[in-house]
Length: 464
Ligand code: ZN
Figure 1 (cartoon, rainbow, N blue to C red):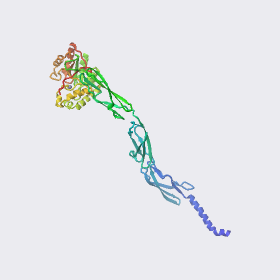
Figure 2: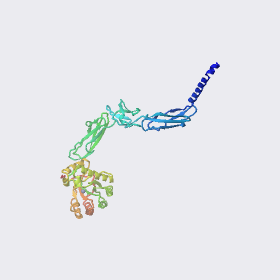
Figure 3: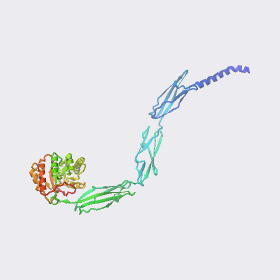
């Protein structure tokens, strides 16, 4: 036995040494590990490298470098150089930048969509966005179910997202009736009233004009205010109605009918004369009417004192306003807005520059006064001409005696006296005559009023 042992002891010794040495090297040799081989797109990435053996952590003897760019998807390299005592090595790892974030779909409009009974829901819109792909709205798949719509989308890294919108089939919206022409129509007694028509539209049923019921009528042989009611009901039972007012009124024949009252009217203001005119009117305690071409503090004072502010023109340029209906109404809207900004109301009483009988408009548009005299009334305005002319814009512009006589000699107790005068800078003679006109007319038993909706209208004949 001893011999055997002796014979093999060298070998046994060698084996023993190898085993001990091997085990020692095995236990002491450093192990290396990278635990995060995926990096998330857009996030910061730090390689998680650990180097250790059975005795201790040896990470501090390693130098780690990498080229990972988390702003781009793809494969990158992490390199580890290790050196400790007599051991050194170099190791490379693959790291992939990946997108694991789901895209998002944002539903626009109402959470519960409303669709007309028996019809398709009209999509209110959606937006799909992804942290990597950006806007992917065009990749959204829309599935229409019985009572909901399912929206789903996948981004280029196959991350999925799904959301829903519930749909209710019902109609709770009332139809809309739009009247052709104005809500208020003026008709002179004896003329005929013509229904201008209407259109009824429903969100679900479309054009339902043929279902409109019209109730009410107009007797144009009697002065009065008439109401016409238009009612319509859609297929789901929603009703709406609108009303039109038709006012039948008297028209005075120029010079032959009236209330015997004097209506002083001043065109073209406000001006340097307005304050003086207002002072005289106030002193005499009477009201007048201003057909204005602008609006300022005196316009406001006149309005607050109970005078009527009516519209004349913004430009007073015949060569502009009488070229076309649109020019005329643009000009009228401008002066109307200016007045509104100062006194807060939109006057509906107007006077045509040059009067409705003017012939100068023929130079600019044949027949325009025939059109405008009708159209202004269709649009709810009332125009006034005059039947007593002071001639203060004519040959008597500087002659206060003549201005006085022109007015006093043409007043009549059997007509509505609409007196034309002017309020502009040069009209000192008008101002000079004004007080005497008022005093004399009062002496003859006349009373004074400002024009309003109840004033009998005085119209010239139309000559173009
Ligand atoms: Zn004028």
